[in-house]
Image 1 (cartoon, rainbow, N blue to C red):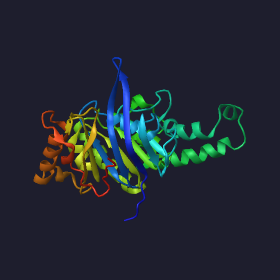
Image 2: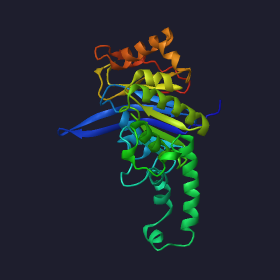
Image 3: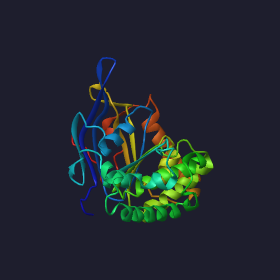
Image 4: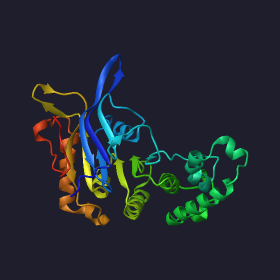
Length: 295
């Protein structure tokens, strides 16, 4: 297996000022992720899952340690890293089609060039529209291209948000509770739909969720962040990766009802979410082949 990693975090600490004190949120995070992995990230509320995504996308800088994308410092956000939130990031005054191509327009067209009708604008826009319609057709939304977000269901709006991210052809998609606001039936449909897109476009996905069943069903790898652990000198501050395990990979939805699935679900709960179960750092389950610790 070649040592090609699309994301690499080494000795990463993140700290914020809270109530006049410097609080550690992420404590010595080491992580290496290969292209086309589907990494699900779970952990107690406030443990730093969204912080981890912000570091990877480039919205934050680590207080110490390094975050590298394709072996280059992460730097500022760019089109190689797309992000999808729980709340649909759609502009209400734009149609579905206009929302999908907006990123391409913002990236490639300066304000004055657009409004001075510079040569080539309409030719480029025709290409973008054609590509956007291909995405919308793939997402079963082509007949809704000229509707506005408020005219769509929650699941349809989320599909538009995903199309908005995918049309930029990012190497990495970061998803922060993207299905959290959906009803159970729509949520399962979106899970299957996302897996189809992942296989088709060979993306690397980081998927944050509070739903452990969803995390185990979708991922090829699960990362459990937790502040509930001990070190030789007692209790530490900030979340560490207490579990990094390879998963069998996406399967039929019926796998959710298997004994093996439920056994793993209970282990994730115990290791990451039970406050009184404080494993020592030497007891972490870091069994994934690419899991590593630098200290």
